[in-house]
Image 1 (cartoon, rainbow, N blue to C red):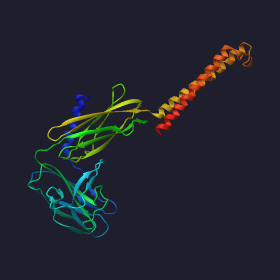
Image 2 (image 1 turned 90 degrees about the horizontal axis):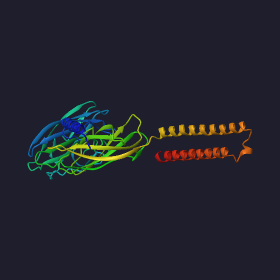
Image 3 (image 1 turned 30 degrees about the vertical axis):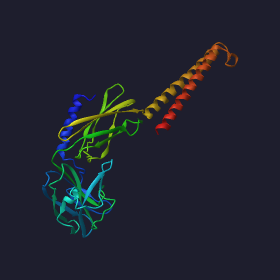
Image 4 (image 1 turned 180 degrees about the vertical axis):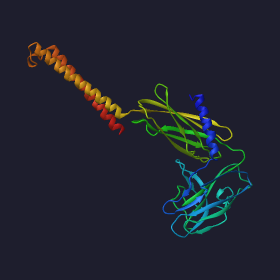
Amino acid sequence: MVKHSTLKSIKLLGSGMFLIGLLTLQSTCAHAQGGLAVKVQPSQIDEVVDAGQVLEGVLTVSNEEGGKQTYYIGTRNITGMSETGTPSFADEVNNNDPLEAAAWLKPSLESVTMEVGESVAVPYRIEVPTDASPGSYFAAFFVTREADKVTETGAGVGFHVASLVNLRVRGEINDDMLFREFFTEKAIVTTPSVIFKTKIENTGTIHQRPLGIINIFDMFGNEVGQVKFNETGGAILPRFDRVFDTTWEFDGFALGRYTAEASVLFGDTQKRTITKEVSFWVLPLKEIGIAFGALAIVLLTFIVGVRRYVRSMLKKAGQTPQSTHKSQNVSFAKRLVRTTTWILVILALLFIGMVAFFA
């Protein structure tokens, strides 16, 4: 059960993160890959608007390549998102469809020609239709060398360089979410470094940025760790799900069964918390191997000591091992040595099996 202090921490964390920005999909400047050294600022545009509202702004396009270049400016719709949070883009814009947000974006220039190191300001308008339904809409301005050129590389968003546009039209919205899965990458780990995977589906009409805390407890119920969930503030588009990775690193010694409890805060008008649990095992092979080795040394030392003790007692009695093989002491010693040897063999096989299984 989540303690009162944990819930308080989650609410404080959520409030702070929601004040940072209104559900941005990307927070870094858009730079191209594969040789196109052009920068577009801002890298994202986040606005809460009313139906029929017109927004105006300026994009700054900078040539960071070697020499004079011509860049073309266009728009595209964001049509989805992968489980890792990478947006996917439509192939073309349908300007006759008022529900496509890319048709709302109006850059004042279709192309710009610049010398190296030069920047050009490109004014733009965003014209929200009067009949736009409440909810979130997603599109992007993009820049490339060739007119209408769409590529598979660049900026991780499907175009050479893009400035993401996230618009939310005011009105009655649905901000529900489903906590689909919470699991570890491995059910058994050999070091106290665990990757938690959290799959959340956005069933609402606005995109959201869930936040939270993952608490880790040992087999005795003691809390041994706590990590923040979605600390980078990744968003989920409506009608899509996303898998978030959270890593727990523990510096101390860990052994046995552990339980992790994820408490996720979400919601726009009213904050709610959803929780899930997962169990996993930590079996540190290095430490276990050292323990097995130490035990083997102790047992071997014990065997050698017993053998020497038996020989010493036989010599004191004026006997030799060959003439007293039926002696009870000798029989007992042999059984003890045999049993101890089997114990060592079994321990060695167990350790080899564990190494092979977890390697």
